[in-house]
Every structure is written in C-alpha cells, then in structure tokens.
Image (cartoon, rainbow, N blue to C red; front, top):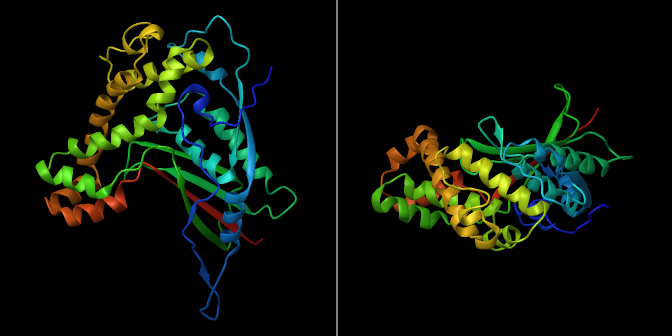
Length: 317
C-alpha cells in the first residue's frame, strides 16, 4: 500500500524539515546587455518558474535496513513515501537531507530522496528548454564540515554562454540572530558561545522536539527510522554517548526528545567549535576581537543554518 502524504519528507521519519513555501527571496542576478542596460535573464525566469511550480516526489526508506542500528518493527506496511511542495522547496529539503559530516551521510535514504527530487524537478522542463541546471547548497556556516548539496538538470557545456540566478530558501532549521551571536561571543570570546547555538539550530532542524516527541512515543516504522538516525548521528559525534534505543530518552514509554537532542547538541558543538577555530571564521574572529558591531556584520555574512542557496543556470546551444 502506497503512503501519499502532503507533508515533509523528513517529517515522515521525524527529521521534520519544515516544508518550504513557494515564496523565496529572489536575489535577482541579471547580466548586462551589449549596450550596458540590464534585462531579466532566462535564469531569473527559470528560477521564478521553479519557485512557483508544485512537484510530487516519491522515494523509499529501504536503505535504513542497511544500518547496524536499525531494528525492523513487527509491522511495516510500506517503505515508500511521497512528499509535495514547490520545486524550490523540495530542492532545499533535499540539500539538507543529503548532508554529510565528513564522508558519512546523516540520513540513510538521502540518495533515494535526492534522486527523486532531481527527476521531479527535471520533469518540469520536459518539452521545453532543456538547458537548465540547478544546484541547491546548504552550508550552515562558512567552510562547514556539515554540508549538503543536490543538483537537477544537465550540466552546462564548458564553452556555453551561461546565465545564473540565485534564490534563497529555508532549510527548515531555526534562524539565528547575528546580533545575539555577537553579544554572546563578545562577552567571553569563547568559541563555544558561537558553536552551541549553531549546533542547537541544526539539531532542532533535523529533530524538531514536539514532532519528534510524538514519533518516539509511537510504534512502527517512523519510530524505528527516527531512533536509528539518532543513534547513528550520536555514534559519529561521540562514540562514548549513552543513548540507547530502549532506554533513557529514546525509550518509547519514557521518550524525551529534548534530552535526546541535548546529547547530539553536545557532540555537534565540539565539531563546530573545531571547524570555527581552524577555518577562516577563526582567523577573522582573532582580528575582530570583542567589537560587537563588527561581529554582528561578520556573522550576518558567514553563519546561516536556516538558508539554502539555490542557483539556476541556463544557456543557449
């Protein structure tokens, strides 16, 4: 039996990224004409088409069974899922679902979902101009170790005269206030004061506490998939963690999503702090020091876990 639900893909397994609305922020990149004036490019128009088009994406969760942490529930009706949304929205969702830490994906079924999203988006242009390539990229902060990307359409030839337009869509993770980050960091100039809010935003994006709580209290496939992803991510972040499927905050009869999230947040904070200290952000922080105004402007440019950049390329033969 096929499960067709007008909900987020990740909500199906409690990795509930919020469905992105069809409205996105169009940055409006335009190319100059030969006389120096500006005109709307084909890439702009294609990006607008994507944001206004609704697509249905069917995918399956079967790859979850490959995990050593997975325990199949007594009853599984179907591993197949369907999600609906704007083309831009599902591209953003797929970029986050496809995220990796190092060489390891955070979500087991990311391949199936990303491939289905690419095929669905590509299908919007069947019978029309096929010279379209779309790249959705999620980088929570500059030079992040955790990142995700998904593409749709054919790549442009190296010699093609390409136009591009970039839109920004929600990743489903809570937005961070750059001014609050600046104040928190300036108080002690402690990198954890910056890393912890980023980690908290990311974990809440994958495991929204209220929705995840409901899933942990239920029986069946959604709970099995959710607990598997909790345990896999905890294993990757901290091999000495104390999460267990049938004990503590993941136990169905005593589920506590907030407490389970705190385990992940602690491990992810360490990873992000290492990233920030060793990357370009760390160098800039050393130069800025405790100047809140400069920190605010800097964080506004370099830290945005709530954003997915979607770049649309078009070209003529």
